[in-house]
Image (cartoon, rainbow, N blue to C red; front, side, top):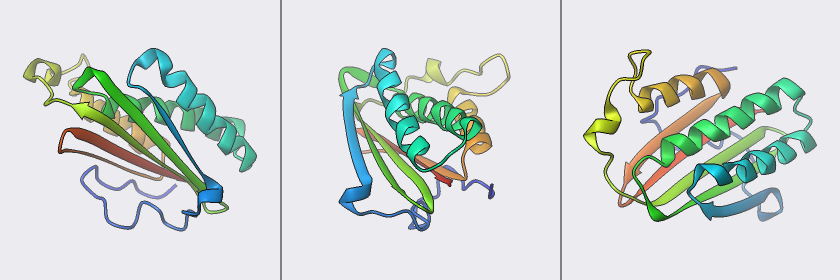
Length: 151
């Protein structure tokens, strides 16, 4: 596993050899409610299984999908939609999660958790441990997060 990129890093690096063709892509749009994120986990786990990821890699990826969803869904409103794009090739898997609309995150949600971290810092720590690279950015009424894992 390579060193994860900063959450502020975007650029072209996220793809890092992962195929962008429509034949190796899928998009899932669901209401941005935690009880529906199992659909995203199941979809990504199915793709990873077909790529030959082992059990541990698939479980790490399922946790990473949850954490990416949590990070992007902060500040949602009832009509918010989570759009997960999954792209794959022999090089690995690239996911992009966009949640819109989102509002600014209330100050009280930024309070430290018992571990002394904010929810954002906790999400970034978990993603750093599970994937090769990731990024999270907020702007223009949406939150976008991505992650990449080599196969």
